[in-house]
Length: 302
Length: 214
Image (cartoon, rainbow over all chains, first blue to last red):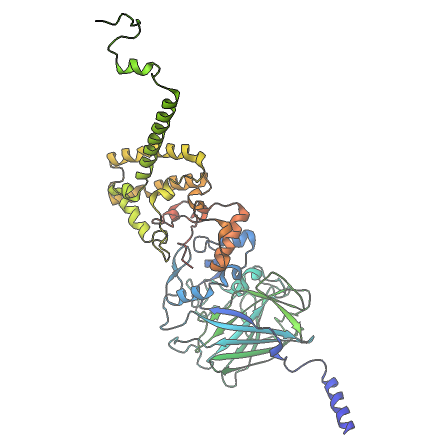
C-alpha cells in the first residue's frame, strides 16, 4: 500500500508542475460585452467627422474600452438594427439581419502555469438568424488575437481593430471579395503582427493557429496545444491551451513583464467575415498588477 | 391783498421744471421715505419689465421665434422624466446669480432691442430666411456662451455635482477630460436645444449627440 502511494506521489511529480487544465473556479472571470460591429472599420473609427473621439484617441491615447465598455451593448443594438451611429449618423449595417441581437454577454478567464497559458471563454449564443450559411461546416468559431506586447501600433487602444479595414471583404469599400484582415506596416520578423487562435465547432475541424500581418494566415503556428468547445445550456464554452513559448511561424512568446493587447470574437450561426460579435481591446500580463486599468487582466499562475 | 412778504424768487405761479429745481419743502424723513418707496417702485417696475420680457410667451410672441421653440420642444431640455424645463431667457439672457451681474443683464436687455429691429425688417420672418441665417445666429450665441465660460449652462449644471454612477462611461470620461483641458460646456454640447447646425462649420468640428437621459 505504501509503495503504491509512493508511486502515485512520484507520478504526480513526474507529471510536473503543469496541470492539464487549471481549476477555473479559482480564476476570476472578467465580464465582457461582445457586440455586433457591422462595417465599423478602423478608418471609420479614426475619422473625426464619423467619430468625434478622434482627438482624444490621437492626443490622449484613450482606449476604446474606457468610453465604450459601458455602452457597447447599445452601440451593437443600434448597428445591428441598421440605425445610425456616430457624429456622421452612419448606418454601419446596410442589410440588418432580422431579429439579430446587438450584443451578447461573455466572460473570459486566463491562467498560466509557467509553461502554458489557458484561456476560457463562456459566451451566450446570440439569438436571431443570419440567413444563409456562409460557413456550412462550423456553427461557431471563437477567435482570439493578441500582439507581442505593444508590438502592433494602436493595439493598446483598439485591440483587434488594427486589423480591420474598410476595404476587406464584406466591408463598405470592398473591391476584392477574398481580401482578409491585415495590419498596416506589419513585419513578421520584428513582432509587428497579431497572433491568432481559433476554435471551430464543426465535426473534425482542427483548431487554427495562425497570424495576421499583411494578410491573414490560418496555419503555420505551433504554440497552440489544443482548443475545445461545446454548448453548455445557452452558452458556448471554449478553452484554449497554448504554450507560452512561441514555437512556430506567427507565434508570439509570452513572457512576464510585458502587457499583451488582445481581443476575441464569436462567429455564430455559420457566419464569416464581419458578421461576428467582437470585444473591445483588452490587455493581459503574467503575474503583474496594473491597478486602475479596468481593461487589464492579471493572468496568475495556478 | 397781495402778500408783501413774498421774496422775489417765489412767484405765485411756477412751472413744473422751476419747482423741480428748487429744494423740496419737506422734512428729511419724508424725503427718505418717499425716496425709498419711489426707488422700490422703480426698481420693481424695472425688474418686472425684465422678467415679463424674459417669459417664453413674450419671446415667442414674435412668430419667428416659434421655429426654434418648436425645435426645443423635442429636446430633453424642454420635456423629460422630472418635468424640469427651461425658458428662452435661461440660456439666451442668462444672468448669473451674482447681484453685480445685474448691470450686464440690463445691458443685454437693452441690446435685445436689435431683435425688434430685425422683426420689423423681416430678417428671419420666413422659415427659409431663418434657415439661411441659422448658422450666423448660432455662431453669435456660441461666441457669447464661450466668452462667459458657458454660464448659461453652469447656472444649472455643475461638474462637481454630476453623479458619475448615473452617467455613461463615455460621458464620465469626456467630462473628466473637459475639466483637465479647461474646456467649457459649449465646446462640445452645441446643438442640444435647437436644430444642430454645428456640422456645417468649416473643418468639420464635431459636436455632441443630444445627451440622452440616463
